[in-house]
Each structure stands twice: as C-alpha cells, then as structure tokens.
Amino acid sequence: MGGWGCYDAERSGLYPTIQELAAAAPQNVGMYEFLLDLKRPLEDVVDYILGANIDFIFRGNLHFGREQSTPEFRQAFTQIITMLKAAKPTILVQGGTAQCIVVRADDLDPYTGQPLTEEQLMNMVLRDPNTGEPLRDPLGRTYVPDITKEITRDFVVGMAQREIDCGVDSVFFDDPYYGARRIGLPESSYDPYLLDIFQRTRDYAATQGKQLLITANNQFNILRLAKPDYVATICPGVDICTIGWAIHPETLELIWDIDYPTAVTMIKNKLGDIPIHCFMDYAWRIRQMPLTVFGSSPLTQQQRLIREMDTLARANGILPVYPLHICWEVIPLGFPLWVPIAVGGLVVAAILIYKLLRR
Image (cartoon, rainbow, N blue to C red; front, side):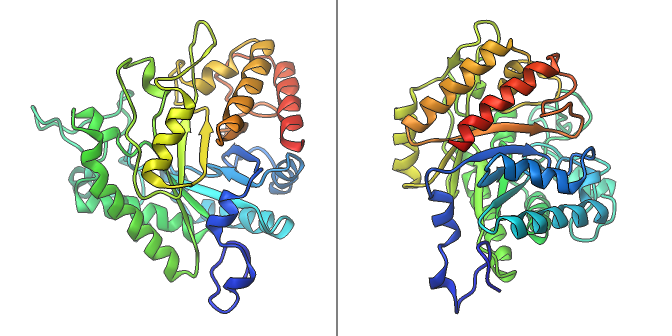
C-alpha cells in the first residue's frame, strides 16, 4: 500500500513507523476542529494548515452526532485527508469519537447507517445506580453511555472504525472516564473496557492495512477548578497521552494539580516514552473551560498565555497543541462565535501562534 500512514510489509523498512513519526521532535501540533468547518472551501483549509507548518492535526474530527455519521460528511472528510496527504505526505490527521461521553437519540448506527432504535439507545445508556433512570448530560439533550456494556463498546468501536475508513492516522477517545465519574466509581475501574475498545480499534485498522495511533483525553488539570482534590488517572494502552491546560477564569493564570515535570514522570513511568500532547479543551456553554477562558481574554493575556504554554510544554518534553480553528461556527482565524472576542485580537493572536509554529 505504501505511504507514510499505511503499513506495507514489503516496504516497511523504508519508512518510519507511525509511532516514530509521532514521536519525532520538534513537531507542530495544531488543533483544527473540524477540518470540515462548513464555511471554507476544502482548498482553503488545506492552504491554511500548510501555511501554519502543521505536522499533526489534532482532532480534525470529533464525532458528536448524526451529521458526522452521514455518507456525505464522511466522503468530504475522506476527501480533505486525501488532499492534505497529497500536499504533505508526512502529515498525520487525527479523528475522534465522543461516544465515551455522549450518545444521541438521533445518531446513526455505525454499522448499518440506519437511525438508532429506542431499544438500542436504552441498552447503551448509563443508569443512575439509585433510581435506575438513564443519565443525561447536563444540558439534557444527550445520554451518558455505559462502556461497561458490550453493546456500547461495539458502538464506540464502530464510530472509531468509520474514522479509520476516512483515512485518519489517529483516533482520539474523548474523556473515557466520564461515566465512571458520573456514578462515583474509580476511574481505573473502566480500564479493562477501554483496553478492549482500543485493541478492537487497532485490530480493525490492521485489517485495512493501517497503523494507528490511539489517544484518549486524560483530564490532568482541567477538572481542578471543579474538584480541587481531583488527580487524573493515566489512561493505559494509548500511543499518545493527551493532557490539558487549566486557566483560572478570574486571574488568567495557568494552574495544575501537580507540576508538569512530575506529570511527565508519572506518564512515562506508566506508558513509556510516548508523545504527550497538551491542549486547551472546551465544551458547549461551559465558560470555565480553558479554551473559552483563553478566547475571551484580552489580547495581551492571550499572548502571554500562549508564550507561557509553549515555553513550559517544550521545556518538559510536551508538545503544545496550538488552537487554530474550533467548531463549525467560526469567525476568521478560529474560535467559536459564542466567545465574545474582537476579530482583530484573534488576528494578532494567530500571528503570534504562526511565529511559534514556523520557528
């Protein structure tokens, strides 16, 4: 099959493995969520990413709901990955699934393409251990999945398989311990189920002649504001460890539950010498999330935070994930419309990010 992102038994010695590519430093990781922003021609998106000198596209897709399950969406996602690799064969593109956190009643079965039945949905949801009622997300529009159930893991793996079909080099599993936290279980109690999901996802990639990088969102620091005594579980079985910045919404200072040298040591002791990506996460309408705080901060504070993040991350052997584009509803150069920030500030902040990327 050939190519940087494909496994070819006869030619494998001529190319670095995908793990070697991911571990190569220096490397520029850019968050472009999503590659299909529904606002720009695909050619413009490719030019934007190439201009930023990106080597790894973080969360180029993160499957949330029905629209991303449609054949039209997946065809377009495949097309832009093909365009990116034609222009830069070494680029790595990450897709992802949020189905460890949410399952929507209107989503499509990843195997049949048909709408989920009520029976399928109710068989997958996590239930309140006291009342037996299905647990919904805080906004009430989606259900919390229960990955301890095989039917739910089948659903999650199916979503990951469809990302692989589109040509991704990496699959991101968003906050895989969410369900455990919702019902008060130790996060590590979910590890056997996650390892099953990861292995089945890798096995499918192998049948397609693909090497694959698995990563999951370890909530280092992000949950510190809500739960001061929280210390993240390091998710096993991943090829890239993904951790998060936390920014205090009032003081705009970087905060963490443990210092980064200690975090890196903990990760490497458990997972080995694998890449660590550190990013600013966000969530709909939750204003305390780091990217939302960052995006609504004064320009001078954005510049300071970007420089501090870049310096601190690289000094500790972490690859910072630069926010280049978030969601579908965007203003020029990124960030959601619901973040109140001047366009001019975004332009200057983006220029600063570009300078860091191109050095």
